[in-house]
Image (cartoon, rainbow, N blue to C red; front, side):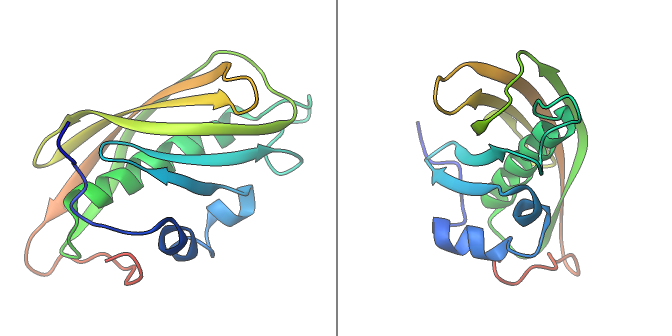
Length: 153
């Protein structure tokens, strides 16, 4: 498969660019960027568990939306664009109470103005699926439209 990401960025740069965000609060760390995917881990601990002691579905959705939105940003590869998540859905498949989960975003469709991502989230130690999400992002490009984050673009 041909590479889809226009913007080249190292994992260190990507993680540094998201230090003061929800990613830090939840312990999300980007771990791989391939030709057509991006991956990140998230700990299942007191930051991400619900009162019943299992991974909160909302934390899984944060991981999914982060992966898809960042993947869209890498596809567009220019500072003269904005990416907006416009629809996300998630099916929670099994519970996990400790350890780490691994999320992986891969494209279902890359268009000029809409991207659709499939995000699988698995328990890192066993590979057991915990959540499957789909994210649609909207891309706005043109003169006068810029991303507010200079570290990435």
